[in-house]
Image 1: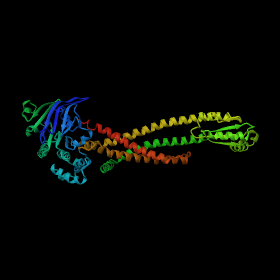
Image 2 (image 1 turned 120 degrees about the horizontal axis):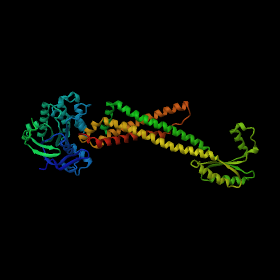
Image 3 (image 1 turned 120 degrees about the vertical axis):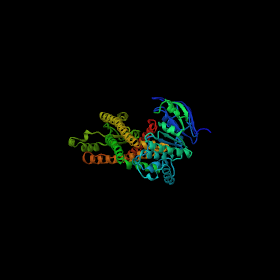
Image 4 (image 1 turned 180 degrees about the vertical axis):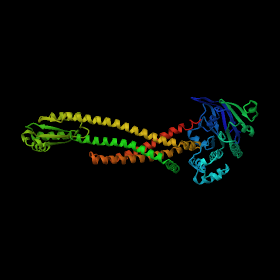
Length: 235
Length: 287
């Protein structure tokens, strides 16, 4: 089966900062869970930006759910993004709206009929375990809870793949495990998840596939987490 | 569309100060432009009044026959530049002179004033070249003694009009540019204040049109309100000047409509440009 996400010899070069990704090829299948790891500046965020078509590759091809970076038209990009869920380290919520309004926002601006929004928001908040905080404001929530809101918003339009850029980067260990478990649950229901992270223990502990980048090069793609201890990067 | 209006209202409710600031900034920039326009309109109308008085006076020789005068009157009226030509008899000429120059009332005598033909030119032909041309054509008639039209005065008037027009358009352009720049940056501020909303809209797949529309409505409404406020301020200023300094004329209705339209258009396109620029940059700057 062809991957739902596929990079073919992708190079991304920025005019000022130079090469961010060099000749990267990889594939993610429907319903897979894949970590993306590597030191800061290794190209993780660039890769996620390429997948959400915020950036286009300098060379090579990015294919996401049938849309190709070589042929996609500007007006098709919003349509693609509706099928992607995107989550960031800093949550990116609207501070002046309630939790439910934040989730509803994603549905409103994509033209979902008003009657469908309320029930859908309630279901999403239940799914991420925040039904009781629907009318709270973002500043009343903990970091872990805020990330759950961001995940609920990312799930609003039923994405086939969830892109998470260091979603646990700002969270303590307990909240990290909670958010990770939530992502696993989402993955179990059929949504592919690509999660960029620095947290090697999480990768090791989960035993899941990970793609490692270093200075823009793909240096490893597999499930062997013993590499971390072997080359002395962990404790 | 409903959501776009709701979002604009929400933005105003959340940051009323910023909204009011934008509207007053637009109003004051347009007010400055309006005051300038008021001066230009009044100067123009004053100059037009003066120019209306441009006329050619053809003094007839003593022996001019009635027939010759009638021919001349007919010919002169038929000139494409001429609005009207009329005969002024020595008597009526004298009466008018006495009325216009009361201090010489007693000195003036029928014998001093010859009969004449008074020629008024159509608008657009009151510049030195046309006046001179018509005057020289009239001077060729045999029964003409002398043609006068205040050569120097006509030339000076023409120069003033030209300078006023050039300076007026130049200054007007500068004022309009300043207004557009100020309004543009005000709108940009409003857009930046909502950068996060724009970012999230794009993130979840709102179309560019959808992202833009609240700002376009916002800009249009603010421009219209600012324009209305500017006209009100200009009207107030005009009433104060009219009552206390000199009689002035206010804008014609079509000029007011043009002002409102300009406000709305500046608001609309200012927003369009600001949001467009922002949409291009928005995500690229993120780390």
